[in-house]
Image 1: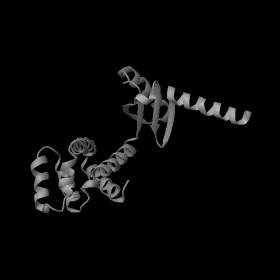
Image 2: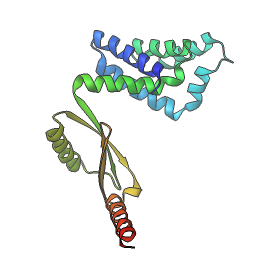
Image 3: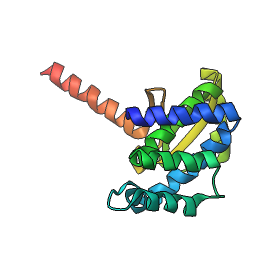
Image 4: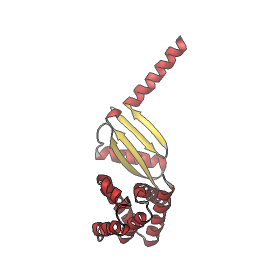
Length: 182
């Protein structure tokens, strides 16, 4: 994560916390991140030095006034003014990390071959809560390479309970046996 992303994201979080708007701003940042992700040309436009700064700020104003919290709109304007608008995703990440830390939330990426049912998500969340003592936020992703089972990533750790993971382990074991046996 860039230093600018960290500084700006944590700065926005501090402001949101002082105003009691942490959750609302987190949600609005997520929506904007989706909008910018689906329209990468808009982000490039906001970062373009070929367009006068005031025009870029007016684009933000026209597009988001009344649709997002004033702090979020002003945050986007500030990033644009300081030529850091391309760091918006990293700012969101820094904000979310600070939010999760303060709220005792652990984000867990869950990779499966097919979507988990609601009941499976509940069981997995309950089990991880019992193991970690934290509130769990599952980020479920479909990965056909998994074949079956579940792979979890959280707190810099990976737990691989997938068929592909087991096949890889068996392959390593067989290679070691062949190498030692010759």
